Length: 84
Image (cartoon, rainbow, N blue to C red; front, side, top):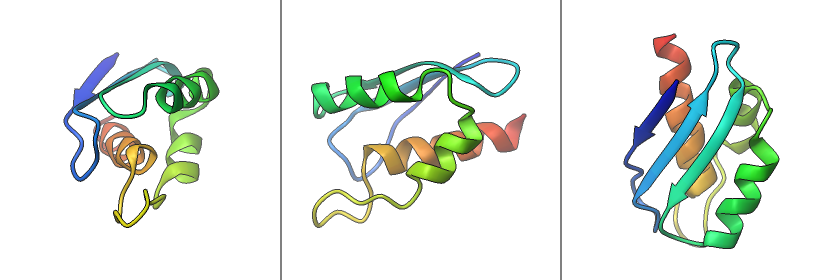
């Protein structure tokens, strides 16, 4: 199922993630921000269990910001997993 959410405190404007019935990330798009980094992150996470990705990415900061695109994705995944 595809989920979309608006991140807070980062450059990106939207995060779109497709998680299958087994909880595996099938696709990831991050709109806005550092395109190359987002493509790399998406490539690394495809095929990974959403729970594993969430645990690895949660708490990562970006410069002086207390959050980052990976952290915002982790927070989104946490909400998705709580719903399912």
